[in-house]
Length: 153
Image (cartoon, rainbow, N blue to C red; front, top):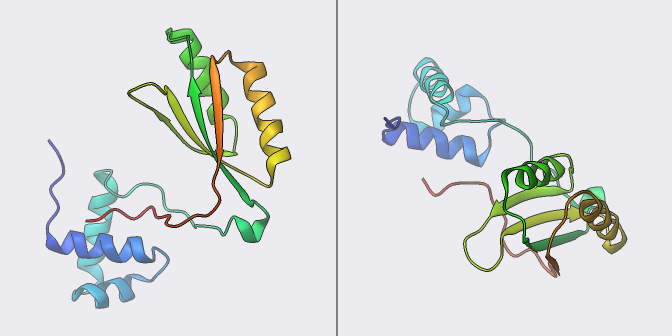
């Protein structure tokens, strides 16, 4: 059974998506409640798995990661052993920010953040040396227009 959230939970979650570093007092004030009920709701949301890992969002370009590639992968391998090896290779590479298995002509899409094209080539060479893939197409993002992890709750 799915965990049910009400309007107050949604307000709290919206505030936390906006800024998870704000204090309980600030969240409570923003949602029109007091600190203890807000803390109890946040605890229950965490226990139910609605709230997962809390982290900080870094400015990639300020840290020198100026290139984002979307990597389309087609494979002729679909057995369990290949998939396990492929997933392990992706999880071991911090450059891979997202990885999705797709329906359709493309099997996987990766979002890869690196410092430059040379760093992407190092990533690419390492990946194909570990795992057999049929076809790889890399698309360089020219401009990030929108990026968010916030859900429209």
